[in-house]
Image (cartoon, rainbow, N blue to C red; front, side, top):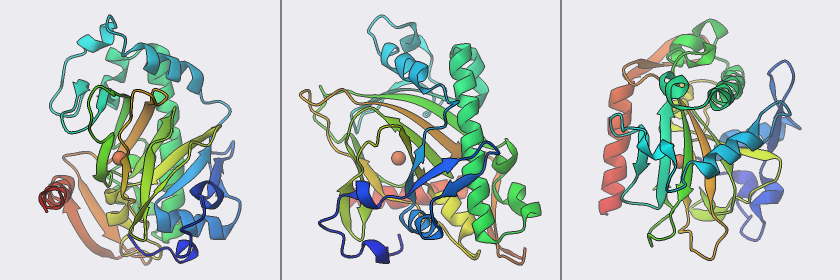
Length: 291
Ligand SMILES: [Fe+2]
């Protein structure tokens, strides 16, 4: 991550007062209160988004709380590969129901699949703003993002619960691999790394937390404005803490697709298969864990 000049001497400052806040207009445009706020968000790789009025968040939260009940039928959703299904991970406290867009209609109730498509629209608004600021010509946005910018690509809608019976990290330090992550969390615990130090990202009522991932960093790397992929973690949740539920949406490229790097003149600067990029990130993560 680039150093964040505005936050260089921020040790004593609560992030709640410095994190930029954006909103999405009725025309689906992402807007910050000032240009400076956008620059901070792009450097940090994280910002708050005012929850759009039309987003049916309450019923999605309710769904997320109910699906972890011991008699919930959603516990029977089968695993598809390593990433999808009802999953209890071994190296952190997360238990989750994770499904990619193609399976929402099959396994989620209609209103939750529709909620996922509302998050698709938010993800697209965010990535289009990133492309706008990058200077990459609009005709190339689709190719650069493996189709995500126009409604394709890959997306996950996950409902997460932190199981305090496991004395482990909530979630170990990592960067997200995809483009954009949209998070609704019911309790504190998220921390991000700024200039080498982890700081709390407070829950801001009425707001979602947005962060950028490695694939977005990759495709903007040679443009007029790259974005950072923020390193983050979730601290261990204890049984005395309020129960932490999370709704997480990942905007990702197609796993079997390509990512392209363009500059602001539209000239190709590099490319990678998504598979290779993710494999590289994975080996970097493993090295960090072992060191
Ligand atoms: Fe993450």
